[in-house]
Length: 479
Image (cartoon, rainbow, N blue to C red; front, side, top):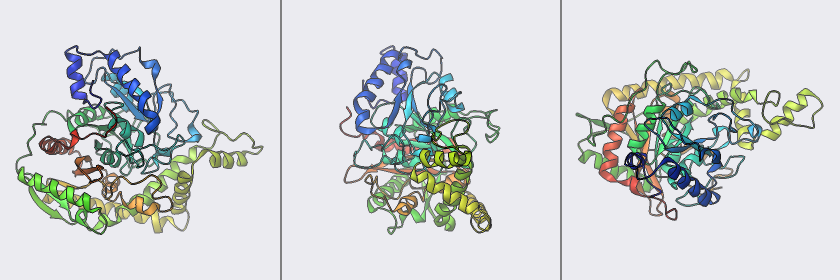
């Protein structure tokens, strides 16, 4: 079987009885066993599922997947890549897992990730660094590093990640995949181990736009367990994928996305070619200035650290998770547990978050960031009155070398300048392949829309994807 087969193709083979569920599970389990030592993308494989295929009849019947390690799966460890939760077994399924199971999908394992989803490189996990299948000396992106690397290498046909500031779209871009950040509230956060509650969303990572739309359709919808979900039913995003752009389609190109000072020239070249191709397909191109975009990373930095510090305050060793054993006083136990249990990156973010929330600084930093968020949202809303969708490169740099930004975290943070704004304002964005660099490293383009525009985004992305075929490129050495 082709290791880079799509969900759609797998479903067709199952329907024709050319293959059965057991054979599919065996195939992917063997691939994980063969390649995971090279990539370190799957923390745990659920071998007990191999003889317990899902009898549910649904859109994903018999299709295996892995979920990022910060998504609860009933009876399984859910550590969020952290030592402090290394012995925590989830007592329930996250809603996104329940929905996938109800659709017939089969969970095959846990995907490695930056600790508590705090990272953009896959280097900050208690389980070690995840490598990019395209070049194992480089990052696959983060924090959904393991899910992206696993799909890219053909170890699973799809995966579920989470995004707080680009953690689905950036790894998708670095691994030549498709990744969605949905409208905030479109997917349930119930069962997601929280980083920043006002931006966290689960999203699918797949090989193709159609596959992504299929999985996203299943994940969407209101959830009684999560009051932040929108009071809207699930929607079938696949029904309008006909390979054509919408009538009277105007695509807004964000002007900053062509700035040679901050973007790799090979990315600008691929992105410019993508714009020209879309124009030939019939899109009207308009260049849009979003002045607040340059403050997006700063807004996200402050809000996410503040919410992260608040969410992680619950991990103190008293109720569950790791507990320091040599403490005689309660206060000492709190301190030693958190010193031992959290990694360096998480500690830095907790300290930063507590600082911007502290007396005397909350008004200067946190409250100002909330005000700036509203201005940023208003600028995007104004832009969407002029154009149908916006576009930019997904990331401003190519997949970088592991360890390249040790001691230079700011540069790595700034690479997310085109993904964090959508998370901050809660609007959808979809990343998909648009070319390869000279070193044969993936380059991604993203389409951005107003709230609840996923159907439109998928339609445009599918038309572009099918007319270019960049998704057919695969990493070497995983046949």
